[in-house]
Length: 151
Image (cartoon, rainbow, N blue to C red):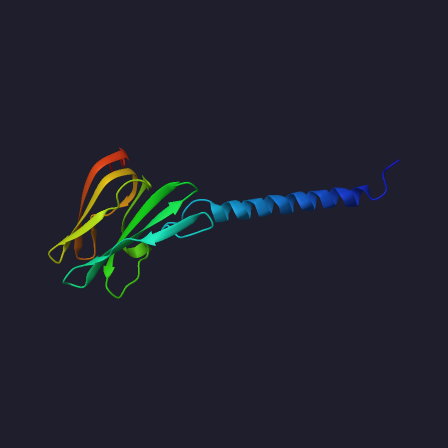
């Protein structure tokens, strides 16, 4: 003899399970990983790097996004843009991951059209462009744990 209301209980348990899985997924997405520009989320915070401008009105700026408790990991994002423009995907020049106890990058202009970015140690480069608009970008990386594959 079937249990009275058994089908309703089964549907209630199934609905609760689906809602629980959905809530878990949403919370995981909020706490995990960085967006393409290292935006803050529940477990990440970002701090601005010192921006530097050249005489032609171009700026090299960026931020360091640190995720995780007790130091966690760090991602550096460097942008090259005009003074009035904001940082964004279109002017992202250099992105890499590092451990939080390493030095921040140094950005130095040589004239109006060349930017040199100096980094002592990176874990992995995730984006490296040779130029943005009229600006040529040179890199000096002393040590890289996981080099980018050749194109």
